[in-house]
Amino acid sequence: MRRFLAMLPLALLAACSPASPSPDQKPPQPKATATATARSTPDNAELGSPLWYEWVDERLHISDDGHGPDRGSAEWNSAVQHKLGQEAPQSQPGSPQWQQAVDALLRTRPAM
Image (cartoon, rainbow, N blue to C red; front, side, top):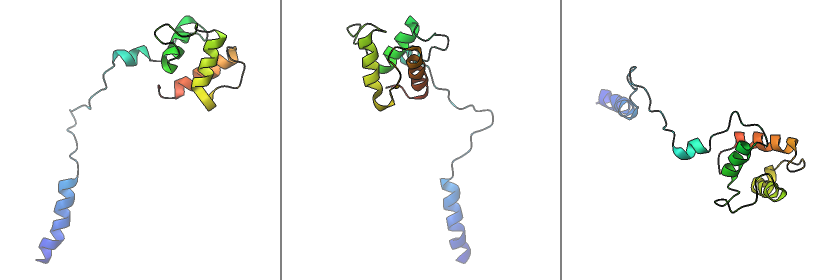
């Protein structure tokens, strides 16, 4: 009887332990979707380029199907500042320093 009581917790522990995958089995890889590809970071885009403005616009949802402010305009920069809220850079909106800060911030935060 004592052996049975001593073996019961071990049996429960063994039953609840996850089985390790076989060495030849690889974990599933996430599939890239069209949305994820469209919102991926432009590794080769220069700050202030049309590609960079498009990426920022997609990440922050500034334009509404082309009905928002012109990318790079003072109104667009203000909308970016508003979307970033307290995290917004303190430098002059639209300046190279501001663009660099926005770029660094968006590269380190999840997409909205």
